[in-house]
Length: 178
Image (cartoon, rainbow, N blue to C red; front, side, top):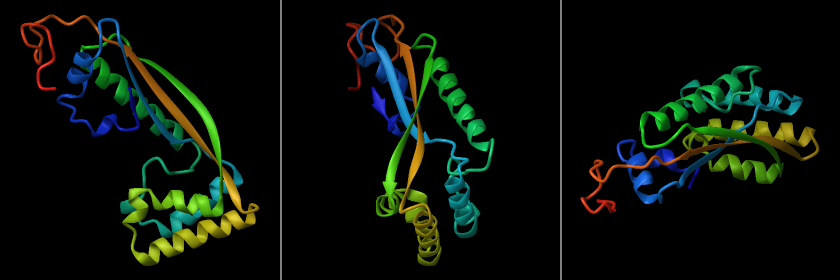
């Protein structure tokens, strides 16, 4: 199982090592939490702040609140991971399940969350100040916080039985390189 980190493992080894680590009949389970589509009034207002203060070169591709664009990006992400897992030929058909949920943040909690995003951390001091002040102002108008939508995307695939001479396996069938 990998939670929100599997993309950091080198594509050349991530499926081979996963298949080697699993017992016969075991399951690969990968999941990521991504921002959900927020077309609410607060989502649109926050997007306007981003449009004003986030340089286009740093805009996160999943941060947009423009109607329709989020679901297309999410579908593309799901297809990309399904194709990659299937393309490894080490696992059976990929099952994808999506879980929608929301988290309530006070203004202070939300600004601390934004502080963890790499594209926010690299903003110039002026852009960051403008962005954070603008978001804080929107949230103040909403009663001092927001409910942020998320989607957890779970990918499940059962490992195929691998021959002993599969690349990465020793003759005894134990995983090499671990």
